[in-house]
Image (cartoon, rainbow, N blue to C red; front, side, top):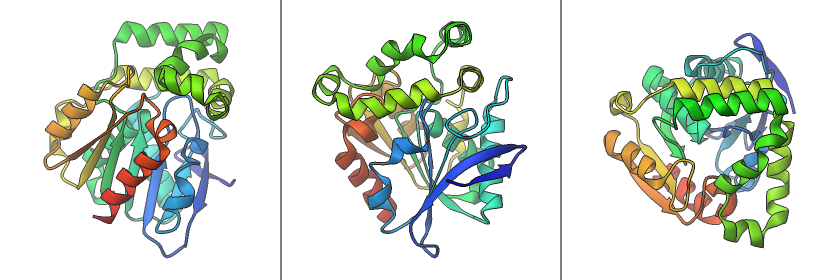
Length: 259
């Protein structure tokens, strides 16, 4: 996969689909990488030029060792678009990726044609929880949080039934750079978009997991209520709904983008 210098770091990305197709940009969750979209990419690439990238601090993208902000993460996405000469994209982000999507839709609305916000929140968790997670990964590495994270990401039924589906996700978590993870935790900790998302004007779909303990369905309902005209889709899944319910997720996403 290629990397490109953008916003002062090397960003790893992958493109699938025809060069003249409309562009769909996919943004990963905290602790994963662009391969979290592997179940969606083949189907989506039939109609779109699918651009996936590793968020700062994840996968093969560089991980500077200082706290990040959503202005920084949003600027990374804009810089990647600029480098790839993409004037406007459809943007789909899950969890942290959805928070980046909200920031982009508010700050550079001319660059976003349609917006999909998945298993995310406008304000995500308590400050002390994020501080503890930062301290844990810096002191003990990514494996120290694996058990608790996987329990939030997938329902018990899915964990028991599909361990092979979960193995590559665990590997993504383990190979995420601790400093990169900590930097993104700081960004999530410090942002609150609950009121400002009311300024978002482009067509928006909010996808929530009915069994998501990380960003509960109520968080999806709040986003859909605050963004004028937003549509809401609920899936029978926990946090990584695109992996636990790939067919239903892809159907909801593709149906909205067609509309």
